[in-house]
Length: 188
Length: 188
Image (cartoon, rainbow over all chains, first blue to last red):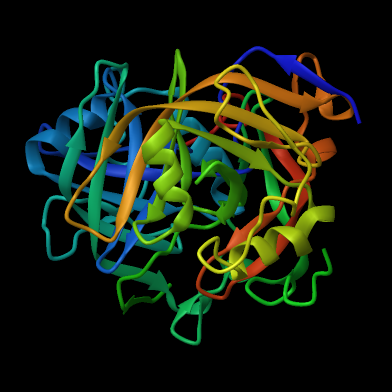
């Protein structure tokens, strides 16, 4: 194989697609992002990176709460729409049906099959263009039909998969194997 | 639809799978992780969250460098093996063919089609069980055959997709649409 050097870029494949919810100026607002990662399991924590000029960031900072909503592929159009239109320009409060949980200020999307209700525990504020919010996942809500053995089932959830740079949405494909298992017999 | 509350957990779907490389005690070592996210585009930056007891963390802290290597699905067995076996117990320096770039201390995997060479710019050291390393992507190397229009092509890269909690590896599936496009005609 031949290695080539290419221009440094945001080359992580694949990425998830989630809708971040926050109350901004007393109204629910949502933005799709792909720069999101679990960072801790006990207690569960999730980090998101969002451009400092995003309207949603204002609400996250004010309330110290946000939600992470995973849309299914059926929601691709409304999810993409939420990313094209900024809360600075349009009111997105009626784009989705909204419910609230125990934190009271983190709006969640009823249609999205999986909802994480998060409290900010740390903000990484580097001299860069993005805020990195680290939140503890306080409560989790899921549509009954995607739950299997008390956890979400990825095939039933049917999440969007994002490839950045070429900017395509994909569906999950075929099963390859089980983690911490398929490598057990590996011969070096 | 009926919402049910489930126990808070690490519910982000899907996750990528990358092999993190670092020199530990003068030898290359690699660990697979799924808790990884782009956090900035200019300059490009990538964050990883890794349990503080991982052998690899020691090398990242000492050298201030690491690599992010994306395996293709053909590498599923060696990737999983690298996660089952710790550098504390076995020498993983000959598990993959290794090359180095300009940072000199971030070992990269020749077989992996995509390699990001990173310099740590910030470590988020919260009172949790994981180190969160934020690195600038200084150089990118890719196998010639996965490059299209000067960027990686996700179908040619054929990365592993991970579902946590049920712990399955998946392949990418069918194309759903284009981002910042498919939502343009959305009618509320």
